Image (cartoon, rainbow over all chains, first blue to last red; front, side, top):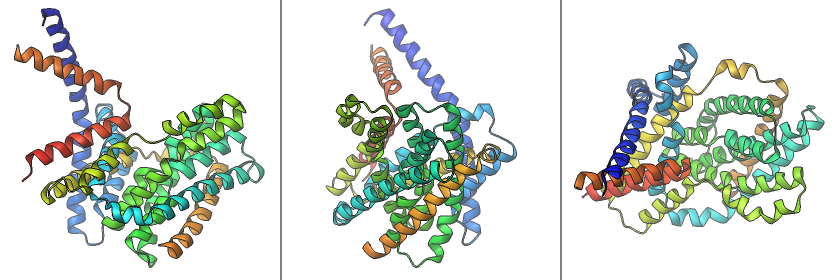
Length: 345
Length: 42
């Protein structure tokens, strides 16, 4: 190996180490708040550590703000959440999933389609919103929250201001549902599986769905995550539908298969791989337990990050119409989903 | 020589990491965690 190549390699390593070092303060803040939430929840009966972590994060973000030095580390929260979901694959029982699979997938397809059509029907005609704003709300509420709204904004060439309003409205509902669903779960006579599927079908974003599920029970957390992943996988189909609707071009339909693949979350590959390895019996009980613990720890950090991203001042600037549209969607879809879950599961 | 090889491997891994989108990074991290825990476990 030449001296020049050695120098390049060292420079790249230094850059990697430097980038990693910038993450440490923010990740440290996540660890500190998650640790505090776990400690407090251990002393106060009935308080859930995961939800308390979200609350601590939101309290810090809105009381004192997030310092710049912590931002790079806090921005890893989605990576932490998705890695936690990949590891959650170790706790999935494939037999159980296959038994419920067809019904669950059918329910997800119907729920997503109904949610999109409902929002499209009421956003313009009832609440006077522009077509593209309605479409962003439809995708955000029906598929996977902010990620879906952002992806569809690119597909239909929506303007940044519309997207910003939709994102703020979705985040507000994420916060509200994260508080409301665990309470509803305690009040309603639902099993862990029923609550998980209901939350996975109704709530908007993956992080809050996972948090609400695990706040109810381990079983609910697993089903909520699986259901939400199935819903997220519909993004490609919804993106193709919107591309055809707005562009009306034949080539959009021709490249549809590629767009459908692009819409599938990549961490789903890891989730399926880990679930396969675990269900083939390749991991010992001790390893499975350790993987489960690692998944829980990553979720705890990610949920604090979720709270740190809550901005009450930004939410206050959201218009009434987008909130009303999302309210109609949430109430209708969650009521229908609850009825379906009670009958089918 | 061994250090140089290690640095080159790290460089390649870092370069690959930089090209990955978040979902693939989560997949890679998850698989590394499972592999390490399986190797360390009883």
